[in-house]
Image (cartoon, rainbow, N blue to C red):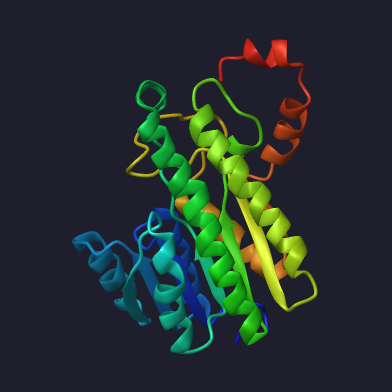
Length: 251
């Protein structure tokens, strides 16, 4: 069960090697979280992630999970929930893709969509049903500011995040009053090892900053969290720009 401050004692991470997810897990372990499940494709990286969290004193377990295998999600996640209640599910997997390549090779674009949207829809619904069955818990969905309005430079990725964002908002509405809390997190570009120097902007953030925002959002039971917070105002303006003007922006 969550503690008096609304923070989880047990955590399931979907996307167990995500830098944002691991930063969030570290932050929550430093507070109260004691049991962590890392779900991801079996790999040395997943095991290293687990060991790094065990070193902080948590009971960390790994489970084989593939976003692109939705038919297995109910079985895989069902086994996790059968081991005991989960206070927080953090849906953190996703791929950025390569816009130029994905435009040339539609099969690659489909893979981005299947990972970021279809896989997340499946895992999100399975997790939500399990949380509802236990009567409590939070589902935190890592969306992206890229989903707010498609940019020429990454509209394939952005469209997949737009779908995910709309799904998570609708799921939150569907679960309102059931004891299950859904929170959508919309970070700007995140400075990770995978991103390198790509897409650095004045609104670039870090995994640690996103983790801090997730913790605060859980305490407040927020439904939407922007990282950094000023992006809420920026995107409100960009969202309503005439298309002809928006098209000329260096985005």
